[in-house]
Image (cartoon, rainbow, N blue to C red; front, top):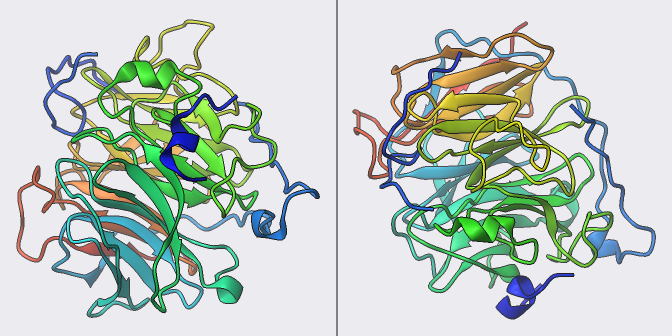
Length: 378
């Protein structure tokens, strides 16, 4: 869906510490139902009707002594696996996409996204591998360009990428950026409010939303608002997307001064920002499943293995484990590796975790940034 005008037009545990800072350490700015597996429409073009597979219940990882898969990365952000179990990693500031061997070793640059405007929280952010990669070889990336944030589709063999969605507002903060294919085979994107909270409450604006689109960037069949890519609204800065074994969707959200959130995402629902931060008890908005004070989390990436949701914490410098069957969240790895950005489950069931100490807000340690691998329990 381009040009930009088509995107921004009217598209019919936790301690309560009050901090005068946003959740990722930036300056403060003013300001469960089951997930419906919306299947592809029979009327949709074949390029917009992806294959989907039943979710696999993966074993939970062993969070003991991890393997260091790779060292020396610069501000890694996105992480996605290829069918051969190697991983693609995006570097926010360089615009490079690296391939990391499944067993670890030196990364290889396999693609560079031109036109990345890296600054503040912007740059080359999330990446996703097409579920039909073995047939179409498509990879997707979310990045900050000179005038907006946009989503592109490309192949690693080279050639110019295709812009499939543009016109997502940009700023030095709150660019969102997470991409993930859902169990229904459609592409989901988390966007930020770009420092303007009112956009989150504007249904006709793509900022402060979770979007659901086809591989061509069109609104996916079954979206709650006719002709719109918007799946849910009232978000501040979504940087984590994950699905449980029951296809329930989770969105991970930075708070401003008080509460970070884990939300159960339901189509068409409003999650309250900027009217509510954390649990507000207002029937107009969905309360979070879990909330943390902003110094405990500043959560970014998320993944589900077994019956546990894993959430990486930036400012909190810890990995949160959230039992989906009930029980209190638990923090692990507190302070051991610094800021944690992205967590993902590999094809073999191992949990991969990236650090983010070279992003301008962390304390660089020897060997940073790195990817850690925690094997699945036997």
